[in-house]
Image (cartoon, rainbow, N blue to C red; front, side):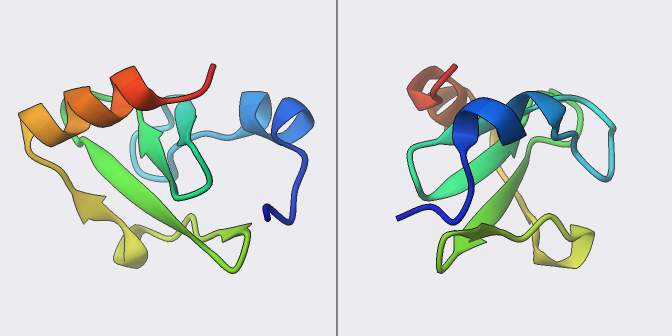
Length: 72
C-alpha cells in the first residue's frame, strides 16, 4: 500500500536530476519522463525514494515500456 495519495502527490513531483515530470508505475516506482536521463526511482515500503544515488538508469526499451505502463 502506498503511503501517499497519488492523485495529489504525483502531479507535483519532478525528477531531482532533470526536473522533468515523473510518472507513477503501479506501486513499484516512479519514472522520469526525460528521454535523456531515463531514470527510475524506487518506492520502498510505500514511500518514494527520490534520491539521485538511488535511481537506476534504464535502457531506452525499458524506459519506454515503463512509461507505457505508467498510471496517468
